[in-house]
Length: 465
Image 1: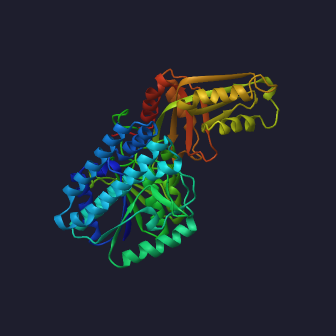
Image 2: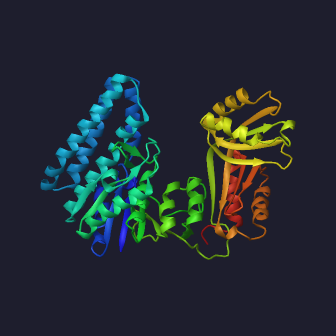
Image 3: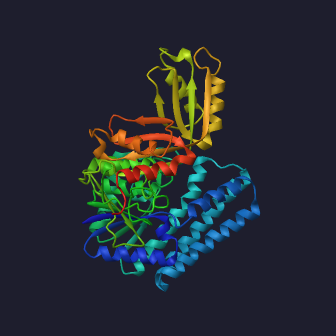
């Protein structure tokens, strides 16, 4: 088989873990063609973002301390995972990149300015360092591994720094030519996740968690037979196990179910990652680096046949609700458009929306951190006009998302969901359900969130038996 394996940051957080991941690759490389994709080691991405902010604030001594810590961390990792010959071959490259990182950071420090482009460049070093170390470890294990950054692998994007979008056709041609040739020659391509280049060769990034996306882009371009996403969880679960003690791993999900779960923050999956493999119908497995024998979760075109229409119950924290009211909104064309455009111009993303048939109010769920900005924008633009009479914010809100392909066309799902919630004395503030019927989302008071998840999880007996 031809398999793309992506290893997350928690799987590469120490020298022992990197060696463990290398042994996993070696084990499967005996009978398969493997492409390896690496995230930054541990919390390195957060450390690099903190470095950018420290430099932007002009704190020179702290910048030096942070650079020194990053340098020592990665040199120590390289020393611990390689033999003498490979360490000597690789250490000069790593030291050269550390010098480049220092120059880029000092540029931000002197200018007291960090643009999206310069931030992407600095943050990209996390994946560069970890992938170089992983390639060295693989070579120490006797494999013929070759380091590639995302651009060298063939991934070309637009110039939306911080969240670039791949140019799929040119990327597919590049990847098939470059990576395909390496696989034919018995090489194990070891590719940076998260980073790519635009058409001018400038470093871009795919957004936080973008290493999953890198893996699925490569898989769909080659094409590969499967994608394995190695993380620190056994798979996608019926609920957050920190909240629900009897939550279990879901063995099989459809692409649509997995996308819904990813959009609501399910651990172990990037929301955009499934788009490329969904079109190519390439299965994705979510596996646990710390428990490699576990079956994990398989994501494919079909879902697991079960008598339970609900697969998972998710709790989305750090949200808030805005209700916009006005009697003159009734029958007034374009009211919703004006509200949404105002929020768009303020840079506020709307996560959920609901409007009553009377048209006299619209309720919106947004990130809690954006609440003040959203209220201010709406008050400036619309409050006191002929249309909008009141803007009512509620800060202590969480969203419950109930997901399952079996909900489609099954009578009584909403009745059971809200009946279970009502039995606990919980009031529902807002409801949204799309025509796909894959998801019912509703907002409750923050203090009621965990109890609502428990009630639905128990109602559909999703836990261990």
